[in-house]
Length: 278
Image (tube, rainbow, N blue to C red; front, side, top):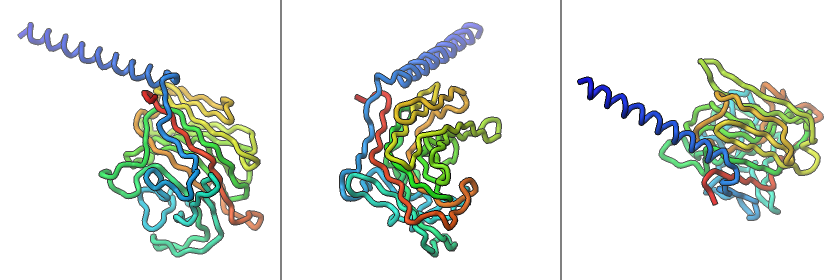
């Protein structure tokens, strides 16, 4: 009996040690950016959106969608998404629409995601990944009540963890916001940072997130703007990408008479590098 217990303990210890080694190797591999390769790229050179990887709503798409959690005032439609001249354009319009959720919205707009196109785990997302580097070159619109964003969500359909690569409020287009949202001990945590410049509505700028098992880095036009190394804040699951132009909501507030419509968020390219790709 004693011999069996000792043997079991040794095997358990070996399994634990082996697991730690494997985890450390995975961490080192994902953290070594020299080993990363391009896994996803869209330069929007065609005449229409690539529907094999992109969808124009959240997975709760019902002939359109919105994000009620933020009290947003737009209804996303496929008509708010256009590709031409090598640019993806997400356009918000002041247009009253009776939506499929039974509510009336004063604005329509556009969004794209690489997530699932329907509420079914049997459907694969267009593209999801775990660790890597995301780079998006785009130009935002200015105007009170506009809320463009680049962000990541889990393929589990949970709302956390969430990484906000960039959020901008249209009345202050030169102030950039970065956040991570996650749960710890039953409490929602949302560390973030706001930085000044560049003006996101004046010219094209490149927004980059570097995500490893131990750190998150936000870069703008190649310049490091924020680093987060808090262990609990680092996601360790597959996430997908979203780019959207929201209108209104609790944070930006509603548009006013100074806001010009149509307003368009323009995207030049999206590139994602991941570990183990060559």
